[in-house]
Image 1 (spheres, rainbow, N blue to C red):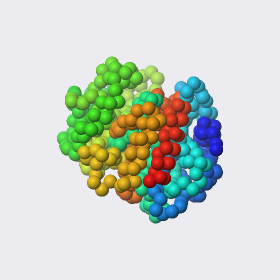
Image 2: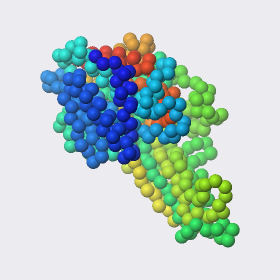
Image 3: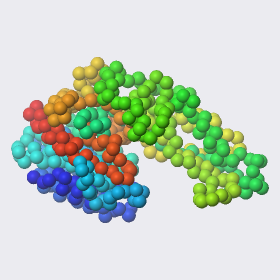
Image 4: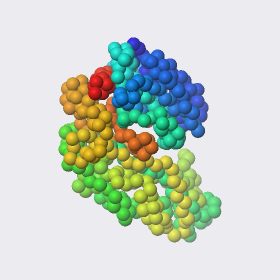
Length: 456
């Protein structure tokens, strides 16, 4: 059986950045690495082309009456920039203490290696394991899974599993297992305001026209109330309050406001009334400004009134909001507030639908929940308690994984999400790392879960 840490090092050395065509060799290398690794533990592997980066489908099939687990992961990673802030080389994995550093170690190469290792160990012990397993590993998650839904529709016939099993989500501390039961959706867009037909001298023409930068600032300032709520009529209309058991689970996490503020580097929280910071990032929608552009950005001064100004915006969405039922509400409100003297253009970008799955034995568990899904949740609770020393906590996360809604829509399958990365792992940032102790516990937990399902 292979050493998972050494294999993870080999995997990370392939710079598989999906967003940048300069890394096409790294993408191909990561695909070839996974193909060899999965073939080596007995899987039939096919690399399925898409309009951009292919999807790896690896199958182990037996009796049709065996449970069928689909394990999801992605082999693409974020760009390593800014390189100057890395303390190690991003694509040369380095172990320091209990961590392995490198781009993709936590998102998602390390967590995926956890499940591949668990499967490999199980099959080494029992080559006749009564469990059908399919790995589906895509190469576009970091750019919005652009072609994944098309892939799912075209390959639905080969993905008739019982549920999705995955680890592209987080935990809070190395000693507490978290099972993610929900992620927020998202709608992203850009607002562009245009004033004069060209940039103007601010002395010769200032004071006679609406400056697009001023117009943009006034517009953006109008989109929130002083207490932190989104100031758009109807924005909260579809929002469903969390169930009591969800609030109770969040309290079990024992999160401290002071610790969170220190981690963020802020002196004061700015959350809507009635919600703690930890509830706000899980249960409430947002409207956030991600970037402003316009005018002179260089060193020193250039006395100019810009012709255009723009900002990038994302709204995180919660059940029962969707990109479709909030888009017009948001866009119409913004258009109505367009300051006089400028024209507006709104460009839609990527989007994701919120996703929630309810564990078994809760007050609001669907009556028609898949028995195999319930079995996996129960197996994960038992294995997690045994390996981690305490029962797992079930939490929603604030981020978005749009492919979950696609999996539900196209395949009709829900997901069991075992968290593995930590806040300190610096996902998408310099000095990304993965905790080796968490990796070890994750492998043991996953192995026990799959073994329990095979006995079912």
